[in-house]
Image 1 (cartoon, rainbow, N blue to C red):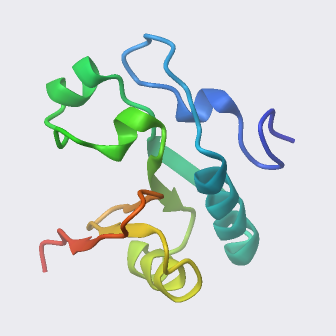
Image 2 (cartoon, rainbow, N blue to C red):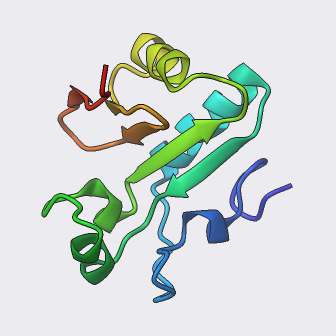
Length: 120
């Protein structure tokens, strides 16, 4: 049992620089819980919260939703990123979805966006 929801701990969302930034938007957490329950597989959060300094260091977008605690880059164990993106597009059409070769980006900005950065 997680400390902020059934399957997630706040530490999973924390900025990788160690600054302590670990805010999690409630809507994002609800979407990730739904993904976990739908696929019945663990959801690994590769990157969620990013302080502005860390976001700049890794080359993140200037207005990244990660800097607001409103985005996560995820992998679902044993499930392709395409299958995760397709599920999100079908069930959570009000969220933003980014397709990448090895993970799926999801965020809860006010005006949804969709993009594809796969190498194929």
